[in-house]
Image 1 (cartoon, rainbow, N blue to C red):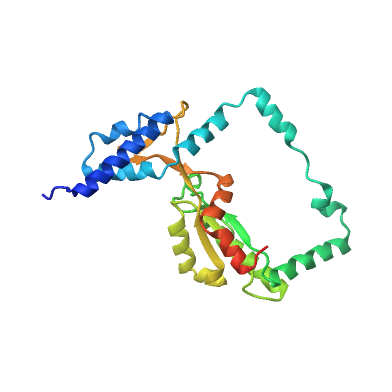
Image 2: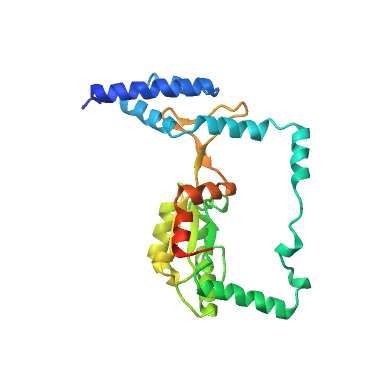
Length: 255
């Protein structure tokens, strides 16, 4: 049976990391977490330290405080800041003439033909509540055609390209989660991307953030791993920047 070993350099680096993390945990009321480090084997300990190192404790603490410490007065002030979208910024089919709708459609199709429009699909969820371990986009929802949601979305994109008169100009960006990215990529590859250009499918991950109890303490999924969950639809904006999607859009000329 081979013993786990670490070099003096590894040990020193690990010790500094642990000390730094302990200080951060103490500062942001997470001092309970490193206690689980003490009884672990070296490799397990390093795995937990690496997991903790990836957490921005200050950001997590401030986010939790903002989400839970609002007074009724503060919440009311937020509501007062909300206002309806200006009428010049949207159209209603019920009050827009056929000629205006035709003009809007032409603008949209011209934009697609010029490659200045992209499609974003938020698909981080699994079909657990539907009785399936697969990403929801792969789920057979019982249509006569047996088409999945992913296939339907791609076919709509291909139809828009056809209407614009130019093919291969409308990319699809799919935000997945840690658990759905790999099966989603495999699913599209196995189905030859449902006729879409391979380069026009871009998958990117939303952020996985630590889970908390009601006192704001980070939960552990096991002795060597922090419990995490996808950061929700609002995490789109972080992921677009951090995963390089905005740069890809700029490169393609998407506006």
